[in-house]
Image 1: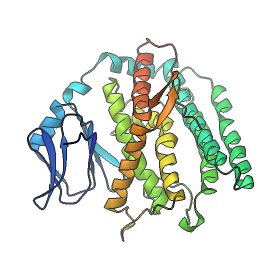
Image 2: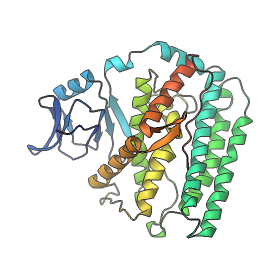
Image 3: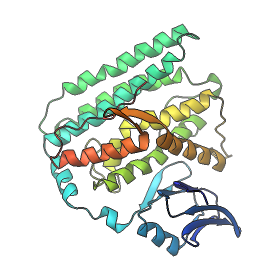
Image 4: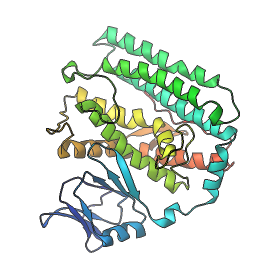
Length: 342
């Protein structure tokens, strides 16, 4: 049986059980998928009406395999991890202390800078393929990329003793850059989609729904990387603390949204791939599965130059989480955001 790195279960009525050192997914007593525990890195449960046996959960925990739960719209609402993965203390103590000093401020700037640079680079990437076919669009995308990038200077000008002193300013800079970025993205979205522009939670149009679902898939990968690095996913720096809000996940994901999700989803719509929805405006099971496979596939198969070598995006994500941990512990002098090439 071939090794499976990610098991995605999204069919209503499916049951995930344990059978002879492998997870087995059945639907109406028929086996529809199997995944050996050896080599399995995660399980993604997407949608409602899906059951897991206690034996399957125990086996995943024993093997250190996380189980992520997403709504049909891609909203993460739970995750199961082995207690051994969340039992580190030293790094978490340092993480909490970093919030109140210059380390937290530096991290807030770095996360925001990474997001802005990646937005600008994705616009440049989309522009270079239109240089010969649409010179006007090429120039406009390049122009906006420069405008987005200029907001990094605004981050450099921020002064304060801790992140609380500048949080609102950081969010304001991020917001202004994002407005320009999404306005430029709209220029490359096929007109027949009738895209209204970027909308977050609750969006009903297919493109925003696909982006939101893709971010939900990425969210689980970021949370896993942080947990493996010994960090607390709920103690962030830019995103304010709220009960049940994984602020650090929302911080670190900013460095990877464009390279992993935006590029994947925009590539699909520009190739004419249909994003199908049901009568309630939700992505169909088939579309959700396709998006999950494409996003996870990009993490596994796409490489970027990082610290002098080419690495898969998943490896870079884990290395960034470890760099974050060593920085808050004082073992690393600086934390540099991940910036994808174009």
